[in-house]
Amino acid sequence: MDARRAVPRAQAPWKEMSAEELEKQYSPSRWVVRMEPEEALRTFREKGTEATKNAQATRRCQLYVPYGDGKGDRMDIYFPDTESEALPFFLFFHGGYWQSGSKDQSAFMVNPLTTRGVAVAVVDYDVAPKGTLDHMVDQVTRSIVFIQQQYPRNEGIYLCGHSAGAHLASMMFLANWTKHGGVPNLRGFFLVSGLYDLEPIVSTSNNALLLMTLEDAWRNSPQWHLDTAPAWPADLACPILVMVGEHESPEFHRQSWEFCQTLCRAGWEASFKKLPDMDHFSIIENLTKKDSVVTQIVVQTIFREL
Image (cartoon, rainbow, N blue to C red):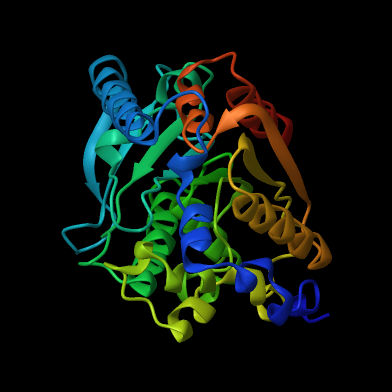
């Protein structure tokens, strides 16, 4: 089935919006109800930086680990106290509209997960204008291959992306893993507040540094390519959770819901979760808490699959 039949592109709601409304729909901070937009962005950065410093000070870790030859090919890996070569690995890809953010502000989930026996890798990639979308997708692919090669006895690799990072993680459904020696031991995806059809972004200010063309957007929109993606092993158990906060724009809700439906039609085990009382930023901020809804979803999924 052609995935594009789900919602004909000519009928996409965003096509009827004014430039001002489209800009608002793709400005997540403007939908936060607990504080003003600038305060939400500042708080998110501050909490991420604090969580990262705390994780580096308290957990066994390897910092600035190279997963490739480029200067931006770096990740931080945090380990549980118990040493073992057979660990589940949680790889996190930060957001920032492909033009901001870094691993140094993104280790929200390290303490809650490492205390449960999960290794966490927080991955950097070259944001725009240095990096193009194609380059970022290649970096994410190589970071996963690196973990698989370095830790071949892993008990599963779980990918989590936030916002732009969710887009990059979702592009892994289109990866040609045979070029990299085979499919890594992927066991789950957590796609949080992501974008899966990039065409609307071309017409917003978020494209100022990306300089994304319509062709770039089409090529890097997994919503429209799952039907032609390379086949994965039939026995690969890989649940996918597509999540979005209650206080996010209708366009973010629409993109998450439609991508989940496309995944299901393509044969994946996908489910959609709208998280009450959460917004684009609080979803990830809450990963610092071991008893938060999002943390519990991650932990239960990982240990159910082991």
